[in-house]
Length: 301
Image 1: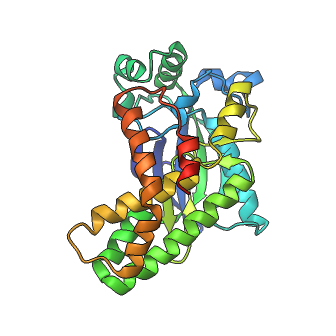
Image 2 (image 1 turned 90 degrees about the vertical axis):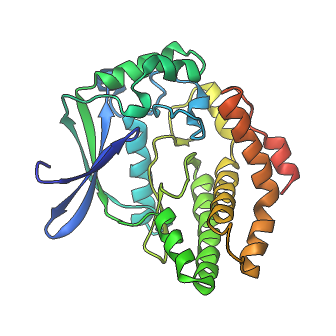
């Protein structure tokens, strides 16, 4: 670990790259709070801080603090099992994990002003407790993961630069595999909730869904409210990823002629994107209690 090359840090934790037997390994360290380290909470997938379910949305102007290291570890355990059993290969493998001392942690810049973050997310005392616990955490879970160096955002940018034929092929692959990957996760009771293109990795042939800090699963120890939230959002990932693809392409191709196949893709996703972007706007600028427009989305399928 001491020889690992730092890659960055943020709301989701810090990351580095190391080699084991000549094989690159991506290391992600998740802050582990004292509350999560209590004997009764070790490996627990309960919402131990009692955070509002609205913190699952990764679309606020200020990020949320995530729902805990044990939940993220649980999702990596699930997804690695699916890869090893060949049920679905679109996830990076987890080779190993370990709880390690990690003194001297601090809140990332996005969360450093605790009062501002708490006020933005509705004044929840539970959220304040989570932020203060993260600030004071003295341990972390180190996840040792398969290294897939390119994210979908960067790869798609390279395809746009390569010309029409490349972008058409790329759009076909991305649209198909976003739907396939999300449908698989959702069929197993897992909602990702943060499938933007910097959280999806690719080798140019397959998409790999990563970064599970906002995820929720029917396998978690859910409260009654959380179980209802999960049921109400069963199509959220499909709508979110389709909208993200639409917005990404309309931005990247704004000043270029759009190939007919890509234009057809945009037309397919425009109705859903219209509803979702209105939801994002109201959630960001009006209220974090803005309800998810499930009924309206069903009407524009």
